[in-house]
Length: 238
Ligand SMILES: Nc1ncnc2c1ncn2[C@@H]1O[C@H](COP(=O)(O)OP(=O)(O)OP(=O)(O)O)[C@@H](O)[C@H]1O
Image (cartoon, rainbow, N blue to C red; front, side, top):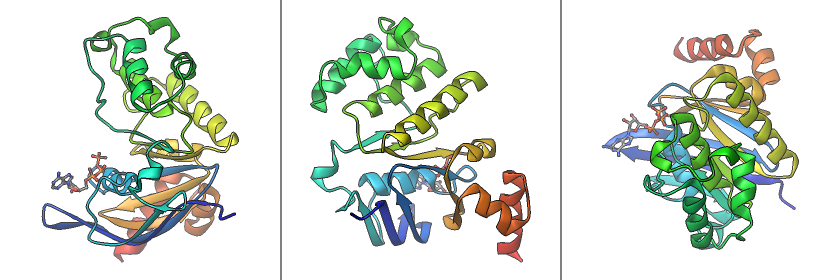
């Protein structure tokens, strides 16, 4: 069986009349955690939207779990959490997840499972609009986990979380990958790169690297990943 969860070839996307992704190609192996890193505005969300199939693309091929991105068979196989949680503010965490579980046709007992996985059991009956920022982003992540999708696409899931919660979430991501789930996780915090098996480093719509952290360190001669990224940028510019 093909071991690639995602195959992208020469993907080009324009937004607002500008090239936002410039002929990008890469593959993501099944059962791994891949970090999508790069500065604000570099195209991370646009790339994720292209994989989910909600982005109009100019050219190129995007294959996800063996199907063209956006194929209807992929709907229940991909979990996508956006940066701005799209959860109704005036119902409880359990009510919101029960609603999404029915829309996604996920089993009813999935609601308690995902609430537990994101460590929100103590707030299962809290009103969404009264959650803290970190709790809200964990509730948002819980929605993406419903139905046990094979591919999780998570747009900055750890933003606003304290270091302990961030650590717990990265542990959760590693545990999911060990079960065979493929994760693509965006971040603009380079220290999160060390938690990933593979890295996609984007800058101004160009893919500067698609490596493991060890390969990136070896390639740039920099032990620190932030410095390695800066080294790549300097090498690209010069
Ligand atoms: N709806 C839109 N219309 C036009 N241009 C857009 C739109 N959304 C994003 N862009 C532009 O596309 C580029 C890439 O944006 P994108 O949201 O993919 O970046 P990002 O790396 O996810 O940024 P951030 O880390 O700040 O979320 C930016 O220059 C942005 O201004």
